[in-house]
Length: 393
Image 1: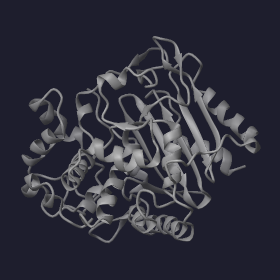
Image 2: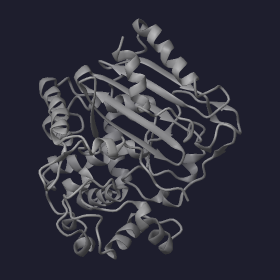
Image 3: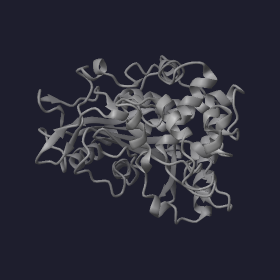
């Protein structure tokens, strides 16, 4: 089994950045949100068609993707959003090699860790309703973990500073010893038997998919709804994201608009099979389309999901016990490009690779969804490479 991973920014680089840099980035984003509060999105909100002024730049983006994707290889899709308009969207390559089905902008992709921010939004919704607080102990809602989790808080789990391990730190082996298809309940049992954290809560940044899967359990126990039902009702249905869902299954995988993902190499691409950990959700179990993600992106500027006051919490950098800060909020990375602040997240799972970059001050976003895990230009991150074509215009 391949390691369950999430492609985040190079944390070896980010962790060496001074705390003032992380604070500066977050402060810029917070200032933007405070200054600009467009009308909330509604279920009837639509995104306008491609804008003609960007024809030359769009051609350059197409040429960029043609450098590593051909009409006969697995590929991907891209959407570029500016001021609520789609200024470019395109599909490249194949959705299904065996059936020779080309990718379209309507195909659904596994979001992988890009979906963490939606789990974080679920926690924020419950906080806004007064049903939990970010600085509550995790064990308040998952008492089975009291001995293991100690003083770690929900905020620390959101920030990846709780000291929780990831799946390749022995968790996967313990899960598969219990079941061939483990669930979040199995995860709780496995974690309740562990005694040693990666570090004391708040002492460092340890990226943990396990943590976000535990947050899904918190959402379920506080809301009384399953995690898939919660995100469906309170996020996807609210925004009219009719082609987005949580928790894949055999029936859904047979949908002709589900992109098949591939691993291997350009010479020998192989369809990626399902994974034993597919039944665990919270860290990344969502499928979506470019169109639905455009609706989601627009909603982040308004109050349809949570108020802007509540959303500001997601944009605060993690603070460690020694007073330093990490450039990560609630399912969001913070960085700068030429002194322009942006928030982002990427993800990789089951052969899918995705990247989502948002320049809130410019009302500009790029989302790239790929159905392959090889031969990808990701230095710098691929959505930022696309963004540069427009930002340098």
